[in-house]
Length: 118
Image (tube, rainbow, N blue to C red):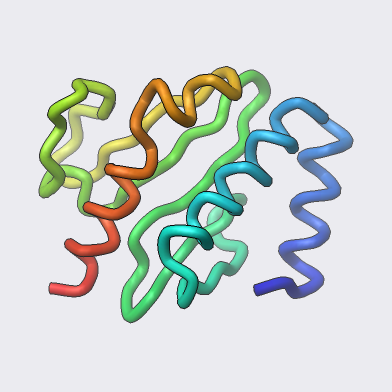
């Protein structure tokens, strides 16, 4: 769960934007509370989470975090928070701590994880 690449990425995020770092840590904690067997690794400048297959990625930008779903097109979107117009990918933009609950991240993470097991 914690290797040097992950630790370095988290340090870099903290240096660039401590508030986003706190939110990234909250998202990581949420993912592990929902899917304890998940693993993470650094790829594409963010954190990729997987069980038997990857199910999401967390990417910190200058002013927001993007929670990416590689098969987001397969997810139901009852709360209308998924963004993206591509054939496959979708994401949820997180700009403040309240978005973790307001945008129903738990439900989308669980759905993405379930889809990755198919």
